[in-house]
Image (cartoon, rainbow, N blue to C red; front, side, top):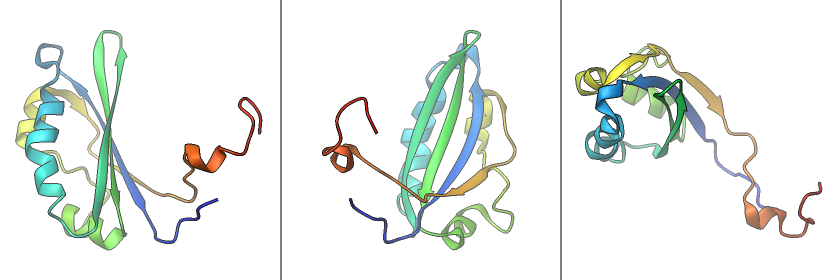
Length: 121
């Protein structure tokens, strides 16, 4: 089994897209935010998760970083505060004004489980 040698911090934030702006947040994230993030030292990647709740899209954004120092370089002195640009605010009905940070302590992929039978431990 592969073991993780470097630290990864996941930064998580959520918001709800306005019903009349379906897909706008994803376009903003891909077209505006991601190009700037990937130029930052310590940025490792991002994921956008979505679920529909009572007819409205809830977005969960996770970004991966190599350290809290890299996150602070991006987010400023208060890394627990969300960074929400005016363009994002325009397409979101509501959003958290805070983020949470989580250290990845285990990450397994399909190749790590290849010697185990399906459906079992």
